[in-house]
Image (cartoon, rainbow, N blue to C red):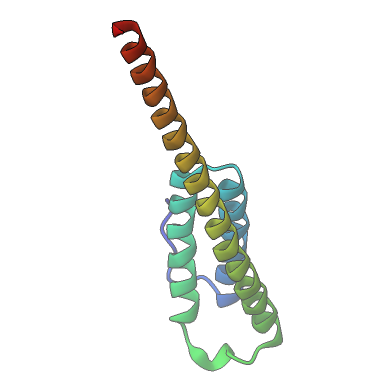
Length: 115
């Protein structure tokens, strides 16, 4: 992933972080977890760079709007990732149940052939 230039204005950093947040959301929705993690790492670096800068911009209305949008999207991403994780767990449980059923069927079938 790209490095974050140190002299980038806070607004630009937050704007890029917002773009990366949207990319992470789209990747999670498609189940592309590794790419989502890579984009999230860049997003985290952008946020760290933005909030590590001079705090005098803390009350700037444009920054507040960007920060609020990032927070809203971040909360949505957490919910989406949890939802997807639970779905994968349900699918895994179903597959395990199916494997056990097939194994039991084969065992019964094998036992019946022996008798």
